[in-house]
Image (tube, rainbow, N blue to C red; front, side, top):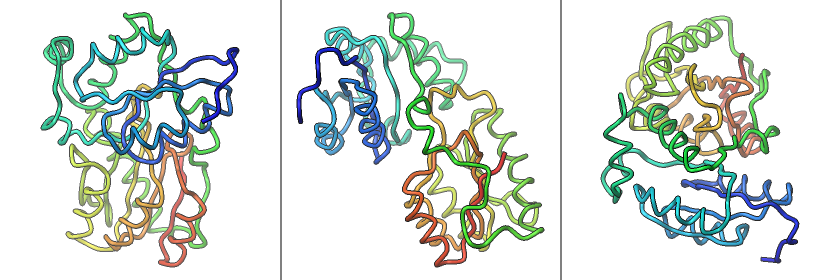
Length: 273
């Protein structure tokens, strides 16, 4: 890639899996940042080279190594983005002494608690954690009906019921997604992730309403909900009826393709406050 001007600011990107870290990296270039990325898989390492000055691949859990990389590179600002399957991370991580220390201090090991503890530890080292929404405002869901089909009155009732349930599980830092039908909770997201939750709900009953929100006490710099074309493909496979997203706090990627596919299958996508 072309070299950046010396006047560009440096930023450290901690990149999980998926397209979103690549979208963010592209936007960061538009903000005249020079990117130093740390990631955890060979495939993502290869893809990030298109955007980043340097890319390092480490094992999940090598926390001190991550700190040492960014300090060596003279990085102060850090940003997190991308999917990390918690079940895989627990099986294939190589935690160092510092990671074990954080793990053992946690009051619980749910996602928001864990991410907040990691962010706090990085801030103690002098880093500043920035939120991706600062650079990706155009990707946040709006309060609107995206598809040709709007929810029916009965579906709106399920959407608001789902929001209530989603907030309740979010208060406990369990998950961001629930599946409901006729004001009954069909499936609740835990460690398995959104896609698996939607499919599990679809096995129980068709024509469900899927609601995805940010947790009420979530640090908005960390782990904001993300949906995209793959989510719509999963909804179709599960024979779901509605996808409701929390407006302003959920990233909606590949929007045009996702809405086009949803319209073909009479699936409704709506952003709600």
